[in-house]
Amino acid sequence: MSTTTADHLFFTQAGLDLERTRRQVGDALHGADDGELYLEHTLSESFGFDDGRLKSASFDASQGFGLRAVAGECTGFAHAADLSPEAIERAGRTVRAALSGHSGTLSLGPVRPNRALYSADNPLSEVEFDAKVKVLAAIDRYLRDRDPRVRQVSASLLGSWQVVTILRPDGARTSDIRPLVRLNVSVVVGDGDRQESGSAGAGGRTGYQLYLDPAHWQAQADEALRQALVNMAAVPAPAGEMPVVLGPGWPGILLHEAIGHGLEGDFNRKKTSAFAGLMGQRIAAPGVNVVDDGTLENRRGSLTIDDEGTPTHCTPLIEDGILVGYLQDRQNARLMNAVPTGNGRRQSFAHMPMPRMTNTYMLAGQADPKDILAGVKKGIYAVQFGGGQVDITSGKFVFSCTEAYEIEDGRVGRPLKGATLIGAGAEVLQRVAAIGNDLALDTGIGTCGKNGQGVPVGVGQPTLLIDLLTVGGTEAQA
Picture 1: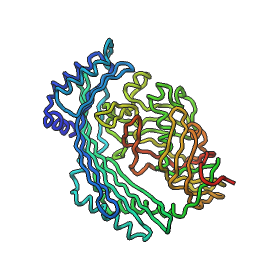
Picture 2: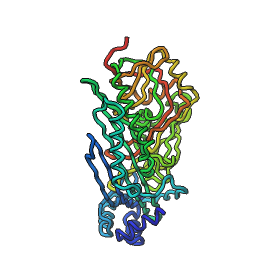
Picture 3: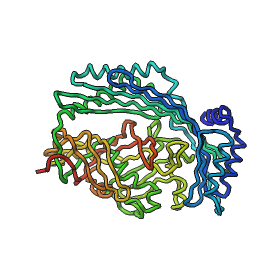
Picture 4: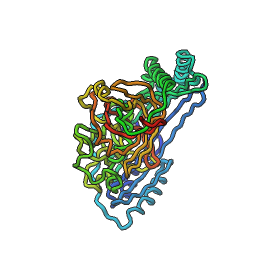
C-alpha cells in the first residue's frame, strides 16, 4: 500500500521516472560511503479555537526531496521543493563536492521492515471540516459550563499525513505513510485577581475519530480544568535539597531531556556527552532500565522505518544501571563501529537526518507507588512538567513543575507553585532510590527539538523516588 501510494505521488503525479531517478542517485553518490534520495509529500492542517470562536484554520501541502552523500565524517546535502529530474541533477552536482578525492565502499542498506505500526489512511480526509470545528466549540462550552471560574478556553486540533520514499544508490527503495493527529486543551480559571491555567492533550499515529469521541475529549478537558483548579490552591514551593518523587508518565520528559539526548550517537562519537566513553559502566542505580522503543503501535514517537529506511527497534540503553547502548543513525553507527538502531530522523526533506529519540522510557520496578510516597518524611511530589533547559555536555538541567505537591510524613499535602528541579542527569540516575510498578507513557503530546529540528516523540516512566535533588522555589526550607 505504501509503495503504491508513493509511486502515484512521486512517479505518476509529480512526473519523475523511477529508473532515471535511480540512475541519477547512483551517479551522484558513486564512491560515497552512504547516502540516499529522500522524497516527501506532506499534507497538514490545524484548527485553533479561542475566546468562544474559531481563531485560526490552516491547510498546507508540501513536497520535495533531500539528496545526501556521506564520505567519512563529511556530508554533502542538497534539497529542493521541485520534484523534477533537473532539480535532482543539480542537487547531485552539489553533493558530489563532499566526495572530492573520496573513494568509499557503499554501506549495505537497511533490511526491509516486516510490519507496519500504523494505518496508511489519511486523517485529514476522514472527517469533514465542520465536524472538527464543532468539537472544538463543544470543548469550549463544556468547560465553561463545568465551572463558573473558567475565564478562557483554548482548544486545537492538528493533523498531518506524510508519505516518504527513500531511494538508495544501489537502487533499493523503501516507503512509509505516516498519519499523525493531536488534540490540545488549555483553560484559565480565576477568582478575584488570581488566575491559574491548566492544559492537557493527546495524540498519536491514528485518525481523528478517537479524539473527536466525546468520552475522549471530555477526559482531556476535565484534566486541564483539574490542573488549573489545583494551581488555584497552590502555595509557594520550598527551596533546598530534599527527596523528590516523580509521578508516572509525562514526568519522563526529564529522563528524555537530561539523559536521553546524552545517549545519542553523535554526541558520544564527538565526546561532547556526559556519558561519552562510559559504555559498559554503571551510570545509574541498580534496577534502572531504560529503552528507546520506536516499535509501539500508533504511538506518536513510533516509526515503521526511520528517515534513512532502517526499521525502528526497541533499543536497550541502560540495563540494571549499566550503560549498554547508544541511539544511532547510519553515519554515526559506522564511524563508531556500531549497528544502526533506527534512530536516524529528520524534520522534513529540507533537513539532514541525525540520531534522535522515538519513545524513550524507564521500565517499571516492583515498588508500590503508595509505599514510595509513604516512605518520604519531607519532600516534593512532582506530577507534571513544563519547560526545561539541559546542557548536553555537563548533563545539568533545570525543569519547571506545572503540578507539584508537598510531602509531609508520607502524605501528599498542599499543591505547590513555582517549583523547579535542578540537577544533572548522571547524578539523578545514581540517586534513584525506588522504582514504582506503574509504568505509564505520555498521552501523545511530545515534540523534541535538536539543532533546529523538531520531531514527534514519546516519553514515559513509573513513579520514581530521587533521594536528594535540588528544588528551586520561593521559600527556603526550614
